[in-house]
Length: 348
Ligand SMILES: NC(=O)C1=CN([C@@H]2O[C@H](COP(=O)(O)OP(=O)(O)OC[C@H]3O[C@@H](n4cnc5c(N)ncnc54)[C@H](OP(=O)(O)O)[C@@H]3O)[C@@H](O)[C@H]2O)C=CC1
Ligand SMILES: O=C(CO)COP(=O)(O)O
Figure 1 (tube, rainbow, N blue to C red):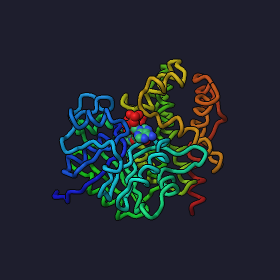
Figure 2: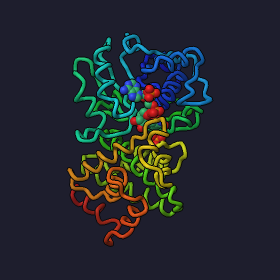
Figure 3: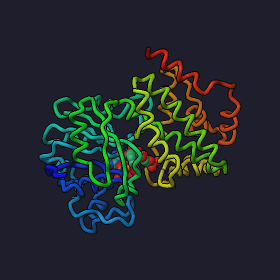
């Protein structure tokens, strides 16, 4: 596949920003990786490594680190936004002040903002002036940075209100190891990627409690049911949840030791306190804030989300993990498919 060489700025030099910079550099694009830690940028430029976030990985020489966002954005028309959700407003403010040309933003983060209850693309739209923001694309799917950086086969989906912009992102990233699909359901792709982290935390907890595969399969299946219920109430296409940004990402995050959400949950299940767990991680655990946001969204849309609710009480109200599981198992009996039938009836 012959591709046009582009100049692209990756904003955020953590694990995911760095792994995606590698994919773009492998595709021969000029890649500027911006991070706010000058020492880390020096390491990227001098040693071609990012040891804190991708230990043992040699970065392609085509990646150049930048600690000045103004320099990183000079002449640039496409950025990849790869910072934690909670940093978006601050970083978008810096981009607005430093941009050179109108930008297409490909966001690759997985979260929902608590209280405002905005999806990431909505937050970008709210914060950014149309003077500099051209299009917003989301890239999401089952993709641990550690495996992408080893060039192991990975599949993701891209979506946007403007599918031409999504197709452009597909062309920039796709290669023999990194297969990119388009999906026109922006809401579903963002909701699936964000909410699977809640179920990954819960799966880590049941693993930490010593429960087995039955418990995890139950969480994943019933978790997907409640993610779909909320997503559909918010306007998503139910089919998206059986795709890469839905079940795909749920599987990879609930079953992999690479997942920071699973690992954090595992420590909670073993009896550690949330504060000490988050301190020991050294990387973002998006599922914690997303649990709060999803709990609030469930109330707003009057959708039943028992796993999210149980986890919310564990994380924010000091509920014991074991009693949260007992509570879930002792809910009043129900028909597995009832709510699905209701959703389908309402859509006719
Ligand atoms: N890692 C993965 O496998 C995947 C992650 N994602 C998503 O990508 C997003 C980013 O995650 P990931 O890269 O893993 O997170 P990491 O914790 O690995 O890295 C986060 C990066 O963002 C930087 N950062 C934090 N706050 C700011 C700020 N205010 N201004 C500038 N930079 C900031 C951090 O800098 P510092 O080092 O100074 O803290 C760090 O470089 C998340 O939403 C995550 O869910 C999606 C798919 C896969
Ligand atoms: O989103 C991811 C894989 O698709 C990464 O998950 P964690 O943030 O839990 O590591």
